[in-house]
Amino acid sequence: PRITFIQPDGAERTLDLPVGTTLMLGATQNGVRGIVAECGGCCSCATCHVYVDEDWADRLPPPEQAEDEMLFGTAAERLPNSRLSCQLTVTEEMDGLVVRIPDRQV
Ligand code: FES
Image 1 (tube, rainbow, N blue to C red):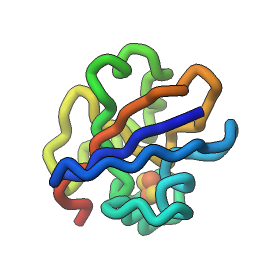
Image 2 (cartoon, rainbow, N blue to C red):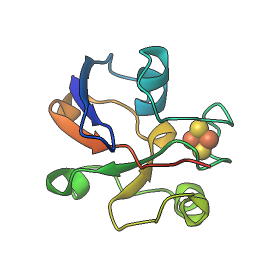
Image 3 (cartoon, helix red, strand yellow):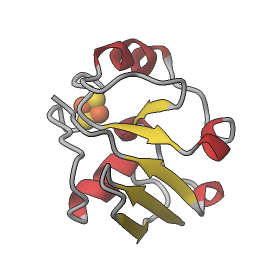
């Protein structure tokens, strides 16, 4: 599935990621800037924060409690479409997903 990452300056990268990886791993392994992922994906740092495109917000599984709690600790403002990219596992249904990267993670 193709996932597009948009930087705060508007630069876009579209990656074709394998099903089963996470958005965080896909981004960091492909050199997408702006995803820090200090904790390595165990939902304890909130430095992998992304904003899911509004069109997609309702089409993704809602955050589990641990993600929801961690989202209160994001460096950039938490918005209704905020998610932790390490908790978003890529599925076929995500083809075309667009996420925006916040201007800071720490
Ligand atoms: Fe730490 Fe996602 S990588 S919470």
